[in-house]
Amino acid sequence: MHPANAYAIRRAIPTDGGELKRLAQLDSSPVPTGSILVGEIGGTIVAALSVADGKGVADPFVDTAALVLQMRLRARGLRAVRATPSLRERLSIALRPASIPERG
Image (cartoon, rainbow, N blue to C red):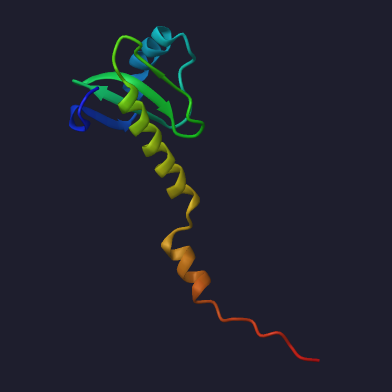
């Protein structure tokens, strides 16, 4: 197990494609799709996770359990942020005049 400061989690960039394919081959799984988080240990990508569906790949020769757990938590947080209306949207709803039902 690695201490939390021994790894880094970031969004994948286009130049990570080769490393993602390498990991997928090592893990015998498809490359994650969509928005992807990658986990690095010592500057080397050892895990990747799709933010949308949580499917991922990891280097089976490296202890990535704690890193993958943190990546899943980060992905969950990113999904929650996307699902939350912006401050502007929340304020516009809160500041709308209340409609008063007519009595008849």
